[in-house]
Image (tube, rainbow, N blue to C red; front, side, top):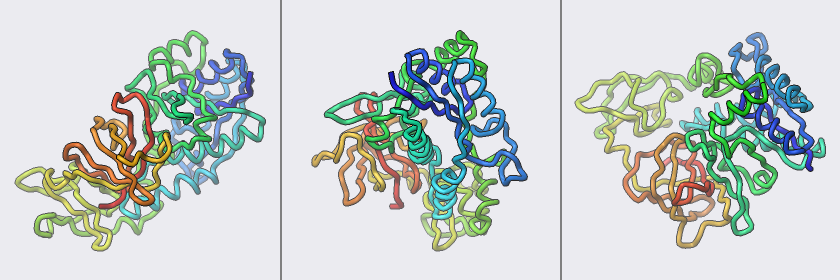
Length: 360
């Protein structure tokens, strides 16, 4: 059997993942990565459910000990700040809507953690993500988890072939209820623990509060302009407070609902318009990852998710220089630059890769 490192966040999913790997006969080492200061006097916050907070680390260690797994805490704060937090702030300042969880998976959980695992002589890395892997045409692919409501392939789409080859997702074949039941049967301390859905490093004030502290210059007020004729509809509170497609919180009144249709950095303006102004049939992607290799010359006919919880839509993706061109089968709402666009097979079972939207 192999030596496997399990990334343990202190939640029930990763706790059970470690137990299952141990029961399968592997030599398991649990590692909790300290990613962010968790005390206000260290420049962090005191939110107890942050994945690297002291309480989460204690829960991870207790679960590891219950499963007979060695446990270590590793400081990865510098890597996390450089590869996740700083790009998150820079993306918002460019008028984008970054997804730090995807960047964390590719650069930290299957980057920093994988390198630490190799230093320990481990052959693979396991996490508590709801996903599966499989092989096709001598390539590694992501497969959606059995619990499709919890599936996390969207957040893993950018993993490389090397990373997928080394990845284990022990809870991908279980539903959330089954995970909790299995954890309870093993008397794991995290069996009934609630989940945290927020970005782990932003604190109680959320993304906007974090960004106001990290980049106050990005919150200079400016005009809210009507897309049709450029008339001033009001004043925004800073470009970082808005994203394309947003409807609520605009503070403007009109004869029909208005949505953010563009972030105009050159004019420090938020552009709004009716829903029809959001519709498009094409989009461009950058920094693409395709698990089956290069895109077919005739294009990839697939389902797309433009947000994690979004309904999948039919589209064709063609190679376009260093990026890709998306053509939607039907008009679709425009996505903000920096958001992830993830492709799935037509049966919605396999994740085929994806990329990041760029400004039109």
